[in-house]
Length: 358
Image (cartoon, rainbow, N blue to C red; front, top):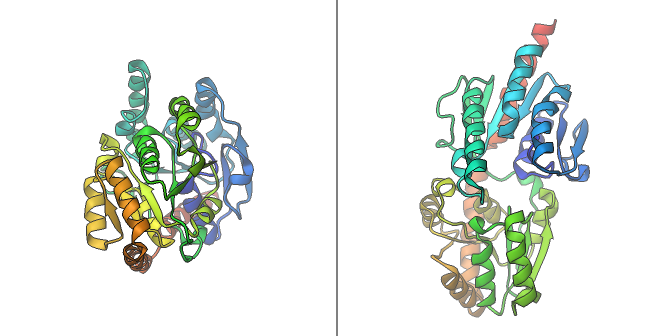
């Protein structure tokens, strides 16, 4: 279940899909439109997105409405309440941590008091997460580094939600899929679009409230506004349908504390659908793209635009990168699904709870 996340969240879909493949009945509780929830679940309860006070209330109460023998939590603010549920009702608790939330607080446009409160919640949640029956993290560096039972579930693609690779369209088109905010490259990619007039851009994902005024101004004044298509939040399967036929996938993240040691999951997903990545030089991104040849690293918007113009003039160079991206994706898929390994661990918790009840 997820309290602070939309039921269309990509990581939630990957985890739930693995549980369903394992033959487990899954109840999803979260936010947003119920139609965006993963397929094959036993039930969905999705609440509208509301203000901070409602989010805090949901964090305290939603875990207590879940019916499953094992409670899976992927929202840090829900961990304290879920931990109490574990103690009072003796449920099994699995917590999934897919980002370094303490560092992420410094990427958000928060006031000092808000940031301090967020970090305090993260610290409490991290301490309790380490004591859960199962703790999964998206990368080796993600806290908690020590836990009662900790496994790494890398943010690799779930191929069941991705379309097969398709031929690129005749005209250059880039795509970005993910949260839309400054720290994730909003300004950089739109500035690059302005300087690469041959290109159009599809952006799939929710726009951060703090960045919406800037985006509205850009849409009203930029000569490139007609070449941008905003799709908002979509479930993963529908989001990646928009990537079919595109030329490039964008991952122009800022060098922030939260991103510096991370590997954006979209690099893997772009490769799986045959899209080379255009990415900023985060250390592990540089390493991965250097080893795989599945994309190009650029330092800023001007460099990104220059690469895009060169690709438009020489599509053959792009096709070479596309071939390398597909080969890299195939090598990743050969290693099996970390989500299925995780689902097997959750199934053991379910079995243990069933034995306890009988």
